Length: 431
Image (cartoon, rainbow, N blue to C red; front, side, top):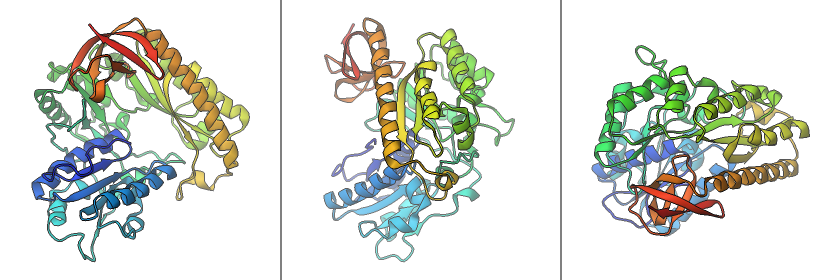
């Protein structure tokens, strides 16, 4: 969870609590500006995630806590969980209003919030059919509050239908932001002093086919890098390795301004499970893309999402996922114990016992933790250009976390030597 605002903060803008992905972080900053301009100041906005049942539970818990801490504020719920189950969130006594994922980025909705919407209003739910949306309007943002890096939405939605995933019903079908709008947004952020920009979306490797000329993600990355020469570092959010086009591969492999770090949407390491998930890659393809990129750029680090305990998964199938951590050389692994989401095909498949799912997730996390430690140990003694974050923390180009012995200004790029490992992060000494 990332908190894009502080409870009880300044009254000039609403408090926004951001749950989930980087795209939500981008949306929260857009909402902060729309709401402040509309005058919706004494409000708390919970921008929810729906990727797992646990994410929805956390959203409800966050809403209740927000109401306790701000009893007099208008409480607005939005995001994927609200888009998928608007009536369920509207029924919560703590909630004044519910906005869908498209509605939350419309100025007129925030003007309504600022006046009468959500206060004894029979129409306190403003959630339309997300599948009917055909365009993705760019949100021009000059800054990201307390974030050290900036996020630029390049697309939203997803045309794929993985059997475990509910997110297309929260974000709709894939829509891309025009190349020119993305380049302009990156320029604005660089002019505002950001040294690192993250291109984000729901499925960013599906970028472009809905735009004139059908540019792909590689074309977009090339345009950004070529037309914003003052941008020091460009980072890509989670991508589908099976859809890395040739131009994108070349930029990742050979352009030093592209961060040497990719988070891959792998989900499993067994071909039968991948097929039952309706993923678009095989195990061999995942291993191959990692090997090719590492050969071209040895300093690159990979992260991945892996699900433990998917329906029908045998011990052998699970072991293939465990082995994938080493076979792909994964450094940062997000382990998800499978949780059936109502309305998805996987929820209707033969389920494993919850104890088995939990035990496999624990074993996979052990493997992931060992891989992270090995990765960090290999970085001890190296010199890195670190992006400083809050509270003396920082991120290396390959996304390893460090803590400084000093407290450099958040957002600065700091030359530093990695002196040792301290748990799951490195210790950095400014040079």
